[in-house]
Image 1: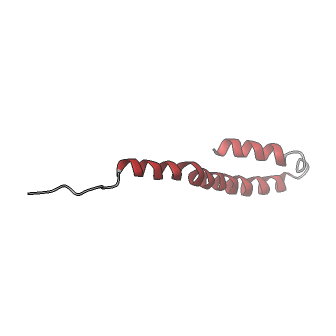
Image 2: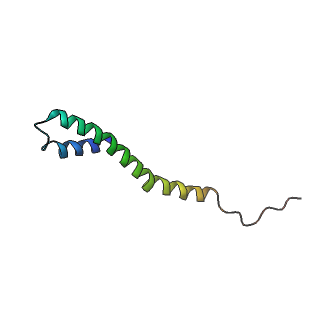
Image 3: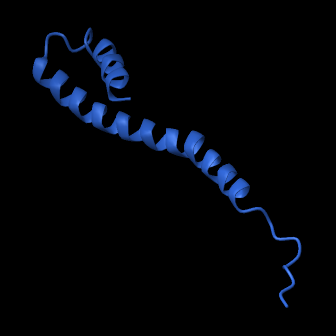
Length: 70
């Protein structure tokens, strides 16, 4: 996930900050870290959590009646 985020940032920040390498480095580093963390959290909440909840329901079906032990 990091490489696509960094590539997009480089293409987005490159032309406006081409004359200022220091500003480019600062903006790129900050946005690369924050962008990667944000996308990882979004992926976790949008994709992973629903599947985890769904598989938990399949693993533990509701108990209809308790077994009778003698």
